[in-house]
Amino acid sequence: MEINDNEITRKGLMFVLSSPSGAGKTSLSRKLLELDKELFLSISYTTRPPRPGEIDGEDYFFVNNDDFAFMQEQNEFLEYAKVFDYYYGTPKKPVKKILDKGRDILFDIDWQGTQQLMNNSKDHLVKVFVLPPSIKELERRLKERKQDEDEIIQKRMSRASDEMSHYAEYDYILVNDDFDKTVKEIISILNAERLKNHRQIKTQKIVKNLRGSL
Amino acid sequence: MEINDNEITRKGLMFVLSSPSGAGKTSLSRKLLELDKELFLSISYTTRPPRPGEIDGEDYFFVNNDDFAFMQEQNEFLEYAKVFDYYYGTPKKPVKKILDKGRDILFDIDWQGTQQLMNNSKDHLVKVFVLPPSIKELERRLKERKQDEDEIIQKRMSRASDEMSHYAEYDYILVNDDFDKTVKEIISILNAERLKNHRQIKTQKIVKNLRGSL
Image (cartoon, rainbow over all chains, first blue to last red; front, top):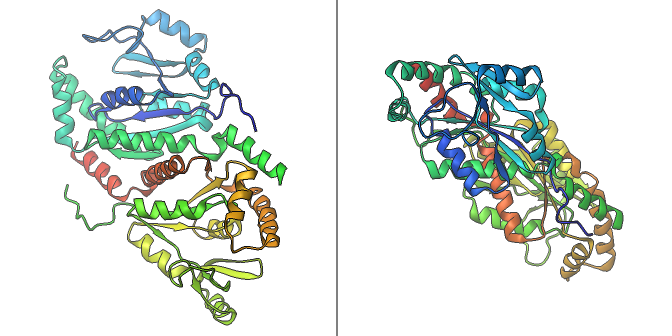
C-alpha cells in the first residue's frame, strides 16, 4: 500500500500543561518544544504589560484592553480568562492550522482555560498537571524571580493552592522533582497519546487494507 | 512528606497485547519483559499440547481437559476461550498478586479474552493492538514456523482476518514494521499509562499534602 508522505497520518493533539506558578512549567515547555519537532506552542494574547526580557509574539502577544475586547467580540478566542486584573486568551486560528496538519499544539494555561477547552475540543485534548516537589521548593522558585514584589509572591502562593485544587480534572499528574525525568515522562505521554487508536488515521487505513487482502 | 519506599505508589496495569498470529507479538513480549522490570507475564493454562521447545510453567501451564474444566468450575479464570479445538485460560491469582503490589501484568491474549477482561477489570486495563506491516510479511512469518502444516497456516490467516476485525476495541494501535521502534512505542505507552492521574496513589498524597501546607 502506498501512502504519500505528505498525507496526514494522525489527528493532532491539544496538549495542555498546567501547574501552580513556580513548578517549572516554563522551562519544561521550552525543552519539550526544542526536543519534539511535531509540537508547537500556542501563544496567548494578554493585556498584562511585558516583563523584562519578554518578547511580543514569542512569549505573548501584548495587546491593550480595547484590542482584547474586540477579539472577544469577534469570537476569536478558544478560551480566555482574567487573572490578577489582566486578561489572557488563546487565539483559535493557529490551533486549527496546526491540528489540520496532524501536528500538536502545546498550551501553557491554567485550570480555567483548560475547562473551557474541555467544552470545545474534547477529542484532541490531553491534560497534564505538573506539581512542584515541595512547598519550600515552590517558594524558592517563586522568589528567584527577582522582578516580583513580596505581595505578588504571596498572591501567587495562594493561587498555587487554588490551581492545585483542580488537579483531579487532568489526565496525567507528574511531580517535577527531577527536570530530565519529567521531560522524559512528558515525551512518553506525547508519544503514547499519538498512538491512540482513534487518532491513527494512516494505521486505520493499513488495517482496512490488510483485512481486504485476506 | 515521608513516603516509605516499600509503599505502593501506583495502581498496577493489566496490559493486553493482541495481534494476528505472525505479527511478531511473542518477540515483542519477550523484549518488553526483559527491558521493563515492573512488568510480569501472565501465563495461561491450555489444553493444547506443547510445541517443540515450549516449557511448562514458562510458555503455558499445559493441562488436560479435566483439569481445565475443574478450574473453570472453581471460577479460577479471569477469562478463557476455545481456539482451534483447544482451551486457553488466564488464572486469577497471579494477576491479583501482581496488581496488589502496584506492578503490571502483560497479557498475550486474543480479542475474545480481551473482551472478557473488559467486563471484569476495566480500571486496570490498557489494550494495545499490534499489526503486521503487510500481508506478505504476515504469510512469511507464519511460514517460518516450520512446525506448522499448510492447512494450519491457512486457518491462521483466516483467523488473522477475524482478529483484525476487532482492532477498534483497542486503546492503542501499532504497526510492527520496525521491531526496535515498536518496542519503544510500547514502552512509551506503559510509562504514560502509569502516570495517569487515577493510578497515581503516591502523587495524589503529595498534592493533598502540598495543598495542606499552603
